[in-house]
Picture 1: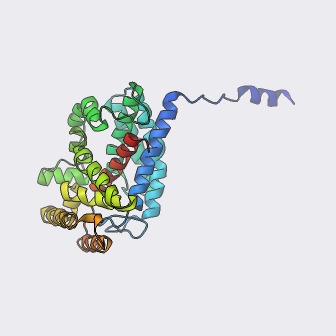
Picture 2: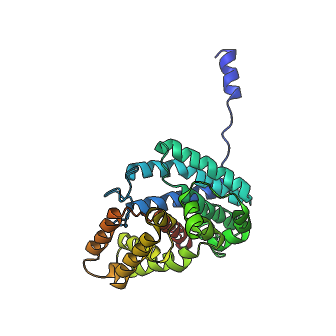
Length: 296
């Protein structure tokens, strides 16, 4: 071996040893990505993309969403790691902006998961922070992640910059609807008051895939989804809530032929160009919180 070769070996960097925070952050990120993949697989979800069809969307499909999820997983780990280190909102926002740029690069400029980066990203950071403060890493929720987000970052979110051209901002400007920022500031009440009860109700009467549909319909019935309002205005939002509530009032996924009824709502959403993207984000966040609470 000559001197140059020995020098190259000597200069080779020593692999960084993964810390406990790294292991925790990667676990949290895997659960976040898995929640997004579960949401994508659920069908029929009114107006939303799945492996069966593209819903009301002409600019994206399931393969694009899968690619976006894969790109985002390392950023969810970064956010969880930042939470472990008790980072402030400025640091979380910087990671989120990098995640958004990576998403847009992977999708050719299509916004597949901007709302998810914000909401699920905050919950990842909260999971890292609460676990690091001494809670069980597989649970990470004795203080409820949503409540932790409010206490730790709520003021900074309230006072922080508002995106100029998002659908949520347009809905806020025209209709006074708070969207993702309001959800975060208020501790993601839609997850705890609507999503989790519906998920567990669905599991009690049907299989896991059907329970996800039940949860999606429950969120559409209860949440003022800024994506629906952007596409269909107040009238579209009223139709969407009534259609979802009607499906649930008829027994939801606990009744025979529920899938045919859900498909009819799905087709009606497509005909009206309605897409409850905010509820899709909340469904994924519900699955993430549930996975941490149950250790699944």
